[in-house]
Length: 241
Image 1 (cartoon, rainbow, N blue to C red):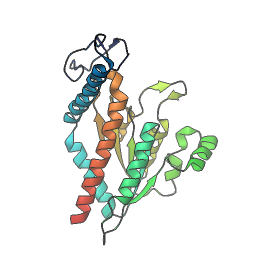
Image 2 (cartoon, rainbow, N blue to C red):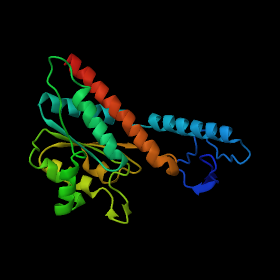
Image 3 (cartoon, one colour):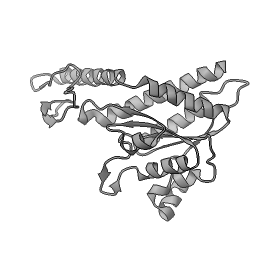
Image 4 (cartoon, rainbow, N blue to C red):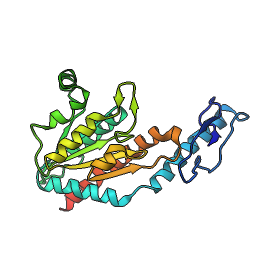
């Protein structure tokens, strides 16, 4: 345990580091009480950016390659890619679905077939009302799922943990099981310990959390960067396929 100050005006707080004892980007806790607001802001910016860089250096690139290969296989089979996420990860899922459908277009080549599961608000609310929140992704896929399709999920905790409404992301857990039962591949972008996604996805990349307080913003930021990396790489592969 150690004390750190993260942002302007925030008092030092006690937190846990990761198992290997990583602290903020410069390796030291910092107390900014004597710094000006401008100096304090610059220090916080530097910490966030350097921590992001250290996080990127620890990613499993082999898994990224496997994900890209899986999605290329779906494209070659003319299968469908389904995309899901909750909260901030819902916006990442929407962004990924849009880019996968549009950015990868190469003249004269088939296009990706993509369905974002977060975007049809009337349908999501109807399934929430009738089948519960855990049904909203799974039930949307049932009519369309086929062997050779793929489900892509973005989740900070991967389905671990719980809040006042119960266990987190049970809609994603149910959707992953539905996809697996139908013979579709499951691709997961998770964080922290990976949660259920690390156990259920055929290809899962867990973004490591080096500082607990910045876990969610760093994980979500890295997920957006990775989704652009994946989509751009797919575009280049399709161009030469």
